[in-house]
Image (cartoon, rainbow, N blue to C red; front, side, top):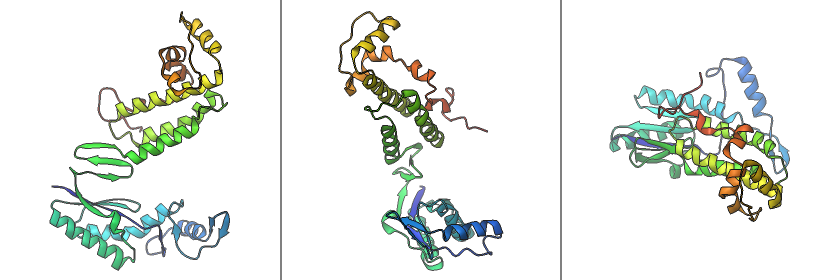
Length: 281
């Protein structure tokens, strides 16, 4: 049985970059400049003596430089790992092996490299029980999107598609597209056609709600419906969320309306004849 050990580093660490690990003078100069650039705390600039805050643009580079020693020591012991910056998976065949490998990893990180392992975020699990890694939820043979990542994405979409705004929908679509493209691109290694279809339908509904709010009265809606061939007069609350999902509104503002606005189709990143996405060359 395959076991996974997941490790996440603490917020700050000190990195001593030297020419034994990095021989490129330009890279060293850039790193030194960024480490000495200081940080903004509560709107006040503060000088930095050592370390790099987590989340800074240079943190992943520093993590890769510093943790290369960990990679090499684990590899020398024949222990298989997958690491992205400071997110680490360790693989074993048995639970006993998993405990042994975890002890070795902690010893390297804390004794040899002077880092602190967060025991609360370190665990041994089976593939059947599942685990999260880089926004993916991996369980058995299934790979999906971590719920918190999906919630974060929807929160960003909501921020751009508030109903009570006067911004033209075409401009909103332009702001949405990079977000949709980035999300679909990141998760395209997973077969999530149904999830992406649901998200796209929800996004179109939010855009319809904005249009209804901007039309203000049913007069404009009924004019659009008549031009489209709808015969019955419609009377609904233009500022209500439920109105954006009615048959009449979907008829007045069909999916092709958003296609003509070039709303990015997240499902287009998948090939209809295969469960695997087609990657760009």
